[in-house]
Image (cartoon, rainbow, N blue to C red):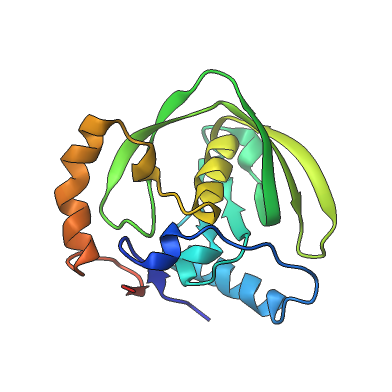
Length: 183
């Protein structure tokens, strides 16, 4: 089922999400809904808070970047209860957008490499290291679980430049090509 994506100004986007355990009811259905919603909105990642659930879950499909980075050809995963253990490497800029910030894109600096511990949909635990665009997508989605949006990582000047767009969005003045929700 395609879920509405919560947009800037929705309190759920500013909350720190909670871990879940194998008894979390309806996880399989929820993950299917996350994937379907992400693909319907043409996203490369989607975190649970973006659909109104304050739990530490996100999904990623980086295959759209495979032309730039062939390692992303089959980079499709669910991350449950992730914990970034280490960020390293020189921060580099990349123009990011977010389904919760329709129409807003900015260059964001993020570290080149990330070491992350997480569980898959079967609660099998992994510790892995990712670099480049994969590391960037992971960090972007992980921020959602900590109540952060990419605009929170902008310089003070860039924040001032998008302030008007964000204020309008918080009042419901935005356009999205997918099902969205304020609140």
